[in-house]
Length: 558
Ligand SMILES: [Zn+2]
Image (cartoon, rainbow, N blue to C red; front, side):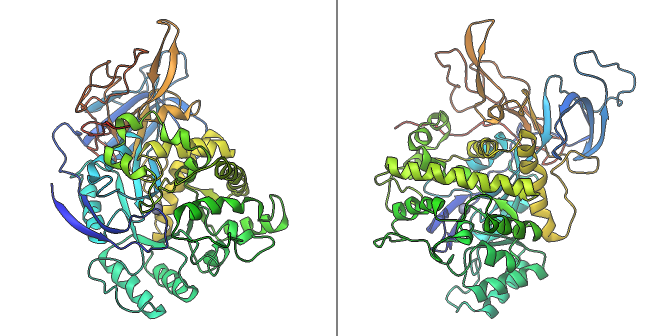
């Protein structure tokens, strides 16, 4: 394990990025048992495929994977009857029986940070929680410091660590070696872009910079094929809302910031209470929801014109609904069933009300706050759904590690919230796969390398033993609860079997598992979904262990 001190130069005005000195320990080198392969020829047999394009599920199919790429997808029969052996692809050097299982492209989380001390000092914890939820590619905005992020990206690409593919975006004027005391001008903005591009970043994470700076950053970034995503923070949004930013070439609008402000009806600035203070986070997070009834309503010309402009400019909307969801139901977020076992004590401590921990703004959270957030979500979801229905691409991001949202679990909640917004489950999966891949590849001017199940593409895949279209909850690392009518007791079903081409063999028996401690046997007789350490990579990020093994998350002081 290498340890590197890094300085996270988070802009003071931006959300969900820890400030000050933050250190993260890189993932340890991949250990024996944390994956095998790739194989010359692996065949996944008799599985039902959800290919990520929005096409309906289809099965049984046999999928042939050569090394880390999909070589062939062959339909081999009809559901409910035995598969005739004739006409099936020849035996592979590795075989997986996918009978009764579902396979999807690996998921993409377009808005992540990797924790860091004190709340989550080990990247391994975060990386494995992502993998355990089928997340095989992530966009760090940023993961951590620039040098550390680039190094970790390289280690993941070489399959030296258990982690998703890492795409690393960074904030302007940050990075080890950049003179942060220099004046920020359009010229220095361009110089930073060229400098950071030389370092090898994939894109720029913007705030709501001053207009001339924003213009320079986006223009220069385009020249080098750098992607862009912006949290249009409240300190700059008056001069840089979403409409302004996309006209300058912004690729992705993340969160809701800048969107509602583009639609203000009777004001040009959000009508804040007169004692509002941005550095008071209950003010910041409490008041933003009050925008829900200050904008042009759904269906109005202004509403539609705005969405049409985003659509015409091929803008991605990356809402990260999960990260604000505690605002509408604080008690639920505080009592997610996985906190007990999977939220690190230090992360739990970070979530508690605090005037200094970012996002822990529950100084006195009231019914009025929740009422406004509930209303806000109704409007926001309708806007997201309208954008999707116009043909706009909505993607999946989490921003987890704040506000009671624990890595990986938050991703599945984001999928559930897209469903709530009105997405068909096939549309949800498309957002999580194809659209995420497009958001990462299009700025580079390259075709997607993953994101749908097609011959020639990387075999970044997720296997789950239940139909995720029927119930997205089966994707939670802890699975979903179901009554077993044979035993009369409830049990856990689902849980991602494989991610990044790595497989956890079958369902682990109760009490079995490689956790530092035994999985809990509940009073209902079901263990949390343990991962057996045997994994089967052979594709994609070959060797990436999807297991939640070695996570030290044990919660002692609820
Ligand atoms: Zn963030």
